[in-house]
Length: 192
Image 1 (cartoon, rainbow, N blue to C red):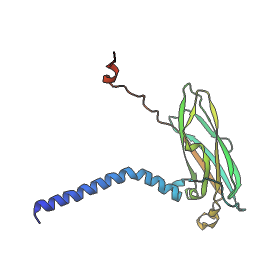
Image 2: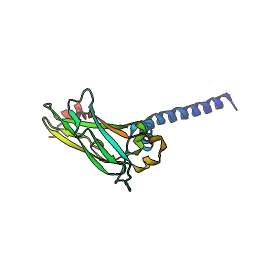
Image 3: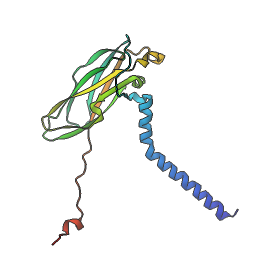
C-alpha cells in the first residue's frame, strides 16, 4: 500500500472520529436528561400518566421548597410546608407565584427531590413545571403539582431509612424570543 493510500485512509478514519465526537457532544444533553429521568439520578423525579396501582401503610413526609433565580423578581413559595402521605397515595400540593413588577414575565421551573436517591420513586402526574408560566404585572397564580411516592420504594433496601422527601422548585426567567428582524432589502422594497 502506498503512503498516499495509508494517509488517505488515516484521514478518513480521523474525520469519522471527529464527526462522531461532534455528534455525541450534541446528543450528550438529551442523553444525560434521559439517563436522569430513568434512574432518578440527581434527584430527578419520574413522570407518570396515572396514580399508583396500590397504597401501602408506609408513611412519608413530603416537604416543599421554593426558590427563584437571581434575575427572577417573582415571589414564589409553597402553600404548605409539608404533608404526611401514605406511599402510593395520590396527593395535590400547591405553590404560589406572584409578579410584583410592572412588566409581564414568563417563567419556567426546574425541580428535584432530596435525598437524590428517592428521585426514582417520586412520581409527578401533573405539574406546573412542564409548561412556561406567564404572569402579568401584579398577577399571581396557584400552581398545582399532583404526585405520589411509588410503592416500589418499599422493596429498595437502600431507602429503608428515608422518612422525608423534599420537593424543590426553582423558577427562572424564560428566555425572551428576539423580535423578528426585517432585512434592509425587504424593508426598502415596495410594490407599485
